[in-house]
Image (tube, rainbow, N blue to C red; front, top):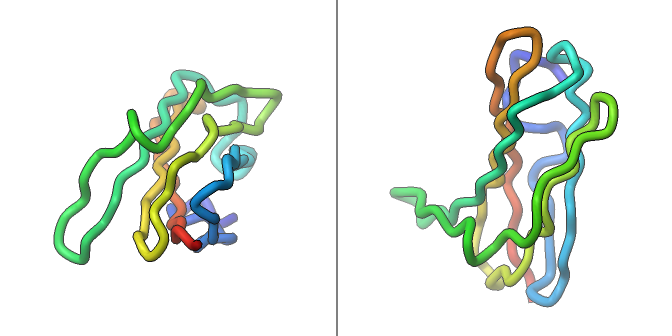
Length: 105
């Protein structure tokens, strides 16, 4: 991961409607030891983003060493594109990488 490129290298991800997946982000390129982690998910309709965190995330983020594990991404809709944003602090700086997730049947 290039720390100047906010979109994670594995993006876009593809996830089925019935799948429940926690994603990971290695923060080492940003200095590691992440704190103040906050994860949100949005739908995108080609014009605007809508916050669907309460519908599409379950649980809490966790941190082990430099790796953030997101809450479970759940209840996606086939054909809808989502944006998963992972905000954290490292070395006094605040970063917010993201990944696109495409819902599939």
